[in-house]
Image (cartoon, rainbow, N blue to C red):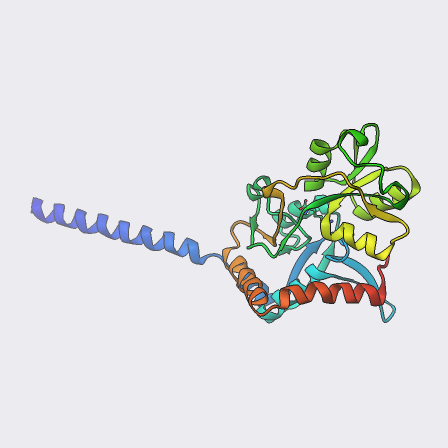
Length: 276
Ligand code: ARG
């Protein structure tokens, strides 16, 4: 009899173990991130549309819309999922909390995959590599050649961006932050700021589109390795969604579309300009 009790205990324990392993496995399958979006039919992406050619507003057929390199990538991600894309425009500094607060499914906003952000959100594989410049007024093109030249200068950087860190560490100026890059460049033209730290593609975009107004200063800014890679951000638990995002990025990189989409964004900007 005693032996029999012992045996059934063992069997019971075994059952509990099998069950709990099974349940733990279910935990993994609880990731409904991808299914939820497919069921709803819409992928919601957060961005800060102050960043041509990556994201900027245009007026097309009398209607305002957000477009740009990141948005074209987002459209491909949505298309591969078989859903529509909805772009939600907000200031850059709010994007991570919007993502964590489930207001958006993904953030695609020229966002750098930094170690500090990795503590809060997950990142896709990188789709673009950047470095940084000090954008100045054309008339000041030769004024800021070294760090010492920025002493007493008013240096702008976007709030909560990697540019804020770079401006603080690598210039001797007074660093002023604003929510929007477009506010910073307006203040640069009005004389309130002497320079704005921006990423290469953005600096080039201003110089190309307004050659009489902007120039890249000669001061060399170093972009730390951790600040170089732009990626799509998602919630940490949304593993299936991120897997899908990476699938699209890999596809676009392999078939050459990834570089073509940047050109396409620049063509759109040339055709429609940027709206307010
Ligand atoms: N790459 C920089 C960062 O992640 C700046 C991104 C700014 N993006 C924007 N849409 N304004 O901090």
